[in-house]
Amino acid sequence: MEFLTWLRSWLMRHPTKEPTDAERAHYTAEVMARVRALGPLPGGSPARAPVRPWAWWPRMAMAMATAACLVFALTSAHQTRRQLAQQPPGATASHPSATMLAESPTSDEAWLEQTLDLLEQIDEEPPSAETAGDGSNDEEWLDELQWLDERELSTAS
Amino acid sequence: MDHALRHAINQGHTEAIWNVILPAPDAMASDTDIIQAVLQGDVDRYAQLVDKYQAAAFRLALGLLGNAEDAKDASQEAFINAYRALGRFRGGAAFSTWLYRIVVNECKDTYRQRARQPMAVARVDGRGADADGTTFFVEVHDPAATPRDQLANRDLSHQLTRTIRGLPMKQRTAFVLHHLDGLTLDEVAAVMRCRVGTVKSHIFRATEQLRLHLRPWLSAEAR
Image: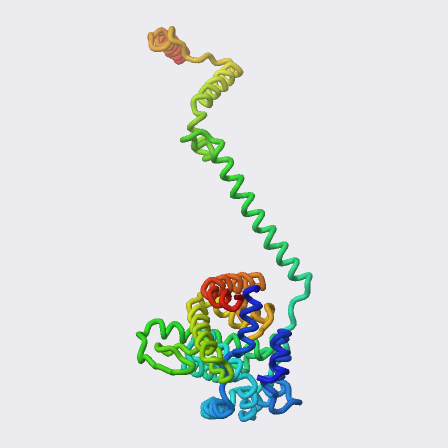
């Protein structure tokens, strides 16, 4: 015999307890005594109209919007995790300053090349090890000053 | 219980059960009419709702609490709370569903209070209560039954009451509303504010527990 069928049939023969008529009258009297003590309800407005449920399309729109937000959030999180997973351990190249630091040797070389190119374009030679600091330029410069001074003196006289 | 009520319960039609058990004092007045009258100041009309639904409210509270005195107090308190909140009843669901929900909440509060308190006084009732005050859900006194059957019924009622009382509150609520009070699954879901699938799950688990604990009686009857 199926259990629920048996239980139902047993409950049919042994119904659940209910208050007797006398108990019911007493029960109602007790409740109403307390209700009367509370008095009429404030406002006294009639029962409002039944709440009208939303139509199907706002429900569907809300559901789709919620689903789209959920998918977007999940996709963004997944992409971020994948990007982080693809980087070598310890690498922080995603940060701009970190990128500059990581590429600084290459940048210095490029800067040097660019500077040399510019100097070449304006016909200026970079200081070489042969001429730098040996004093030959200073002598020429002093000779030139001396020649200028003598010329000025001769002109003045 | 008369034949019409047995038939209504057997068919599982809640409305038919209400109509048989609880004929409205004023058959022409719907619940909404009564509520409107009460809200407009005719407080005495509320007695009609109390008369109409007190048996159902008491039965539900008894099923959830397992104690007649607590069930009476909780169901009466539910009627008072329902009266206080009557202005907020919007009519989206039936008044009975709304009232059931209040009864369930009141029973939960009572259950929590009782759980914090030690068992006060042990009461012994030869017919309808256990030594610790647990009231049987069903009428076990049957003069027509043999003494042996009466004893078996009493044992079964005791075990049924104990098992239902031992269920988690949600399973207990779903089982009592559906199988003892005769509400449909949709109505139970409305009272418990959950999905029908959840109600089915609660009822299934509760039934499995009952099947486990009542197996000896089922086997005995099958023999």
